[in-house]
Structures are given as structure tokens and as C-alpha cells.
Image 1 (cartoon, rainbow, N blue to C red):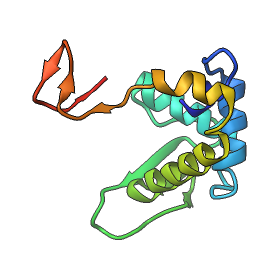
Image 2: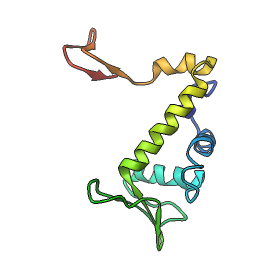
Image 3: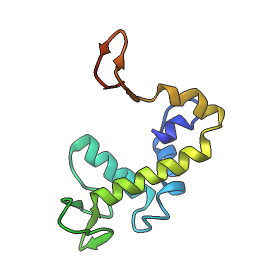
Length: 131
């Protein structure tokens, strides 16, 4: 989403994703290239699998059992899900701070889904909705 919001046309591409990852997450995850993260992302979201090319699988350990993070186990990459999600959110906050005043961000950010507390008239009232 970040790559789309900062692009001129408001759409993301693989290349834009790779660039965003390289700028904001690669320093935290040197064992995970932008290309590899993109493949894992696509595999997980579109096929429900955890295969990339360098790693045969991605393994998340359940929260609350200790922190097992940034480990390469044979042909698998192990990440702690809360830590990884926290790192992604930190990268998003850093990115937003850097681009929030650009014309692209100003134009496209309002179109991104966001929480509407108390509803979104004329569709829902009295409940929080994400739209």
C-alpha cells in the first residue's frame, strides 16, 4: 500500500514494492532480500503457502512461547510474527513521516481504507467500520 500511495498513479507494482522494501525493511532483515520477501508475500497471500525461492518455507512461531526470530533453519526462515509485524509498522511510520507532505501522498492517502469511528453514513451507523 505504501508503494502505491507514494506513486504518481496511485498503483503499486512489483518494482515499487521491491524499492519500498529496500528502503524501509532491508536494513532490519538483511537475510531477506526484497525479491525474496515479495515472493513470500505473494505465496502467502495468493496461494496460502509459505514458499519463496531461497527459503522453502517461512515459519512463524505462535506468540507467547518465546521469541524465535530471524533464524535460518536448514531451508526455512523463522520469524516471530509480533516482532515482524511491529518492524513492518515501524517501517510504515518512518515512510509516512518522510512522504506525508508529497503531492502523491496527499492525493492518494485519503483513498486508502481507514477506520470510521461510529460508522460511515449512509451505510452504517453506531458501529466502527473499516472502509
